Amino acid sequence: MNEKVIVANKGLIRADFNFWVGRYLDKFYDNLENKKIVGNTCPKCGDVFVPPRKICGKCNEVIPLEENWVDLPETGILINYTITPYKVNDRAFRKVKKPQTIGMIQIDGSNTALIYRLLNLEPDNIKLGMKLKVEWEENTKGDPSDIRGFMKI
Ligand SMILES: [Zn+2]
Image (cartoon, helix red, strand yellow):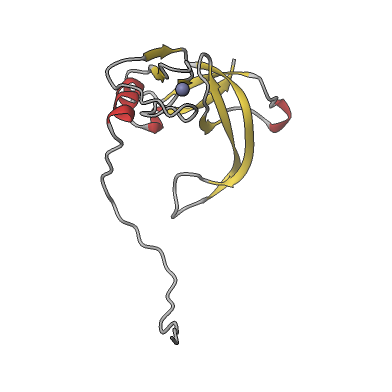
């Protein structure tokens, strides 16, 4: 078979859409709106997930929606980070003027990590394992942007 590209066109299309995150993340975001972090615990191995999951990645156990929720603190430790001139959440205007630092933060009492900006931290002052604390948006909306980022304690 002889295949040939007839038209090649590069461009950017923006489309607004609604996306339902499911009942587990729904509960997570509802709590973010109240400036609280919740996770859920695998009933088999005891791992704690933030954001919460339906199925444990370690032992494939289904975590019931009605049970195994845990309230977690707004503190954690930095387990990795990167410095990038690109925004992670906007595909149209990706380059930023000042490079931002994106960290993987393990909330105290959990076994997973959240990915957010590190605020007011110069690269020289960043150390793996350092203690961090959530910086909340003033007006929360019940979505990931309720957490503005993480700051050094
Ligand atoms: Zn498990």
